[in-house]
Length: 268
Image 1: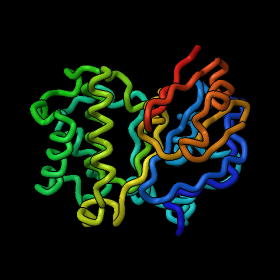
Image 2 (image 1 turned 180 degrees about the vertical axis):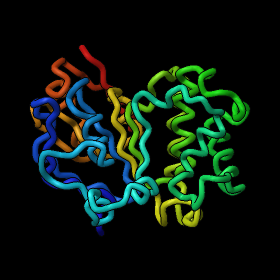
Image 3 (image 1 turned 90 degrees about the horizontal axis):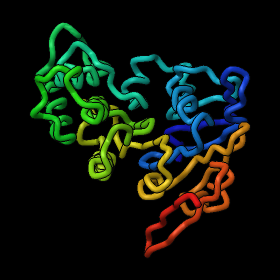
Image 4 (image 1 turned 90 degrees about the vertical axis):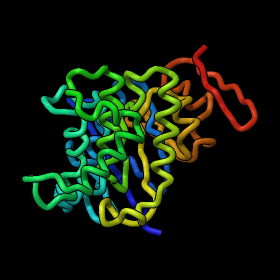
């Protein structure tokens, strides 16, 4: 089976600092990957390189077998969507107008909003419990509300591949759990039922950069762990998330507690 996203021998540097060397990872349709590592190790840079925002020093990234550099920006936007670490900036627009921006890769004209696109945007707002704020100005929202708004725009975009950069930023603990459950429901939806509105057939895939080890442990089946100085390891959640690997990556002692099927990690 062809992976939906193939990263082959990718090397990334930033201001002469080696972040990733010869990274090779295949992500299949429907898989959920976590991207872990301490601050400044290159998580955000890697996400941006997948979108083509940053050019790698060497190696290539393929989406459905095609080099991302050979895919048009509109086609990439139909298929890959990102929630940036800083979330939605304070735009001079309403909440609904902002979510409708997620539909732009799919529309034929920007002169008017198609009723179907408005319905999709409203559904996304309902999923994130923001529909009552649809006509509020974005600059009146709290940081947590703007973060949920960014995810609602991503839901409206309906990409085949979700890239999330610290999705739990600005969210209180209770809503972090609820957001994960909402995202889980969305990823479990087959895009086949909305292929005329979104990016095609099959379950969506995910690569989520986070500093929260327990979030990744609970939500992701596979992990890329950036070790620093270009080093990395990848594999299943069980293989990668160990006290030894995490302690080396984060430069501190990290212990694990197991309870049934759950594993929890904490610094000591």
